[in-house]
Length: 232
Image 1 (tube, rainbow, N blue to C red):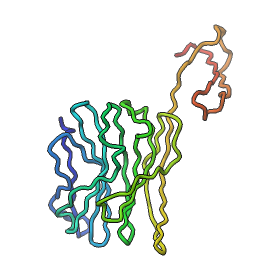
Image 2: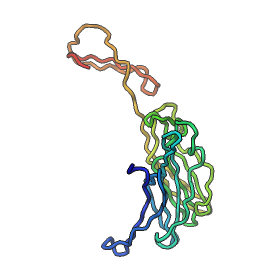
Image 3: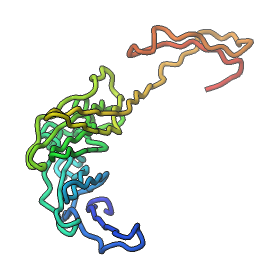
Image 4: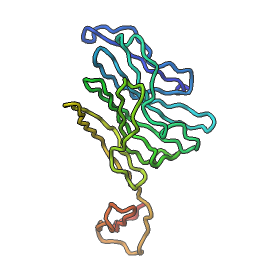
């Protein structure tokens, strides 16, 4: 299976991309892992990268996720042992309804504090990906990623399934020992159209679309419409 072993690699150029160094491997996995969605930052002569890791649990035949960070002090030639960023609430579920982690992002302050954000589905994890609730979470490290603070829920939790808050980004401004953290993200709520029924057998004379009721922020809303031709 071409998807069971995917590693991260890095190259660098010091002449505006005219030539590149030999490819260096960041991760080293034997099987049943996909390392993807990497981001890199450079600060104080260190190169940092963060990424999402998927691994197959053969006992239940599903994927679970984690987010990891590694650093290099020699321009990417060698890398530290990856440290896990996401907390254990998002990992190693024993049930088949495993959570997902998506689109990690991070930033580093001049003093070296690392802030990381991502979206995960622990609030409504499901073996059907499209039924999950995704929320944005944040964690920080003050020791180069060796340990991380408990995660903070950034967005207001949704009461609906099939809600996705993701593609998050984080930036920080440090002043007087206090960090101001800005997190942005997108939110998408998927709506399912169901329960279409014919009210009567009369043929409408024109197209008509009535106001929905109740308002669309309820779990279910109704819309009356007329179509003057036979249609599915």
